[in-house]
Length: 151
Image (tube, rainbow, N blue to C red; front, side):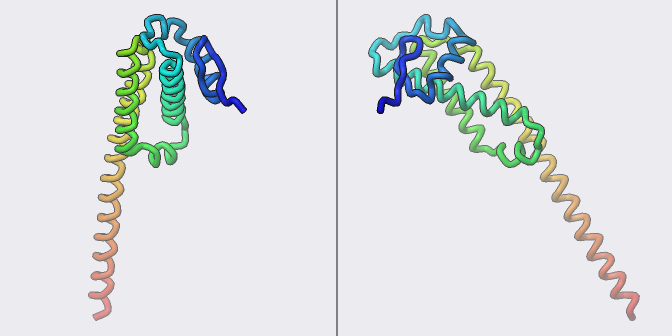
């Protein structure tokens, strides 16, 4: 069974076909200067672009969720590394003639949102640690006071 389809004259995996359609709908001139000429190489780049586009979109969707606990658990240093990797891929695509400035802007917004969320998480962690230490100190003080009353 053939798991590929032709989309905008590029042969891509079927799972990426709808995504590639969405990309070309949103960014119709994206491949106007595409320099890759061999069909196999074009397929590789277009499949990679579709998968990268999906990642960027899913990052945006996660950041828009209202469930703060999900966001807190998902935002880690390694995710910023993932964004750096995505930025590197976008740069490679641009070097081969794809016009991706709009995607780069979206990814920059995701990066900034994650950076800000990490700052918030760091502050919350510090506040939680201070609160726990204060509660422990209060409990120790109460225990000492109760011990003194017994005598």
